[in-house]
Image 1 (cartoon, rainbow, N blue to C red):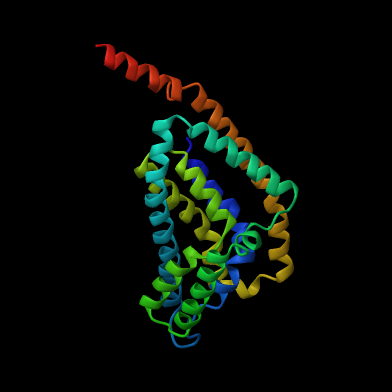
Image 2 (cartoon, one colour; image 1 turned 90 degrees about the vertical axis):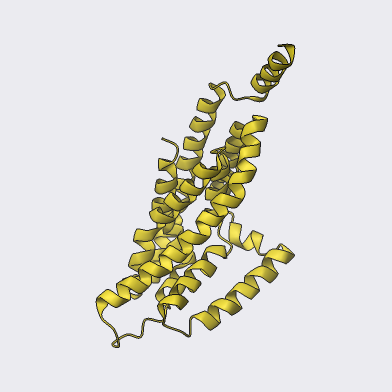
Length: 235
């Protein structure tokens, strides 16, 4: 089932999160020694729910675009393009985030986000943890971009939202672990995780190509819809 790839993408792709978003998760304001382990766990959970809220928003926003792709019959080509990009990024070790930050408006947006995050990290309330999570979801991230394109390929707004929520849930085990005991994970260990990431990118590229092939076997391509419209007009 295609939606399962969202969960797997988040679960396996969170290796990438360990290097990119890990520092934020580790630096969350817990007020160590001033609260119980249960309270700390709940705050980390709220932080991650904040990220998922942002991902769900992306699913809704881009799901509308994806619905148009589905109607136009180019859904499979979106998946093929995504697979090709993943393979190129993996083989040439392209730093997607660095490339994205060279785009002026993304760079300005990222600077603004970091300023807001810096202010939010000074507070330790439940509300601030949710806010930090929501902001974190907007930070430039190649993994999230990949999930968004895959969500677009669902061709359905609801499925797109569900895809992004499942993706977020998949990242939670790693992010929860980083938040609760991230200081125990060495920099070397996080580096090893990031080095394994390209291998899984190629695996996902293959899965997306398989999905595209499956779609090509379905009567949802452009010619099908053109012929259907012609038949409706002839009646």
